[in-house]
Image 1 (cartoon, rainbow, N blue to C red):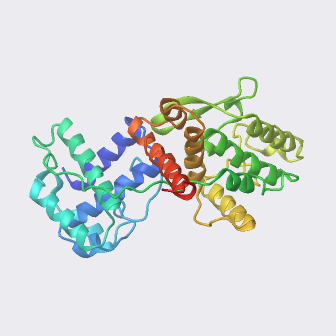
Image 2: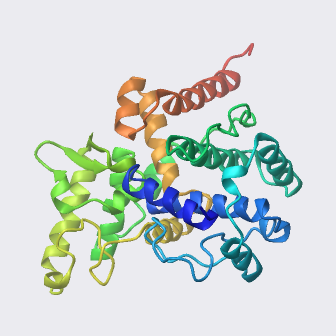
Length: 337
């Protein structure tokens, strides 16, 4: 089996059986095509930091739902014409690839992600019977530097959320959008995927479609619901509303479902207006939601469920963040700290 066909089969598995998001599948594809270039001896391409993807001329369906940019021409020819080599990779070859990544100044987290991609890929190959031994079985993931997520204070949240002018339709949409993210802790991809019928105003909850097509129900506060009601009322009163996407909750100025990139651009605009750190991302609001919930007495399991985390250990990072804040407050306030 040629390598390109094998990678295609794996990406389709991620999409149709594991229900990975297009973004995640695209990252897996990039990592695999970089590794493929390395295995085929094209070190220049493997080191080039290109947006690795399917070679030109390969089948169009790659399981990501997008039409990705091709590999550099030399690599495209090499991968397309050479016989499959990925199934013959052994542990030493993987270690050599990791050493190669080390020479390219990749961060520990990026190297760990690429290693995770290879683990998943070869686990798939093992289950399909293409190999009889996992080449990464004895390779450990490099120890990661612990980085606490950035979190806004309550005052900063209030400043940001009050910045959009809700006197206009787009301003009302933006305020509702930010209020919903902070009130529920949704990922931005989950936010733009919301439909109007996902909001239960009476039960004060939203139905969320999370990673892996898993659904959950998240509570939502009165302030966010009030902002949503105002936005929906202004939207329905707009003369163009009949042409809007009737299903989507948040739509752009053309009435189509809002994109994640648009959410980021809107947030950047309001950060500039209110003078907050421009490095703040929509995910920072999710971090702030989790941290403030724990600081105010919410139990870890409840926060895990609201965030849609599969593992409790993922949620536990916020306990470190709240503990760090307590320590800082102690050091600043106690006379003998």
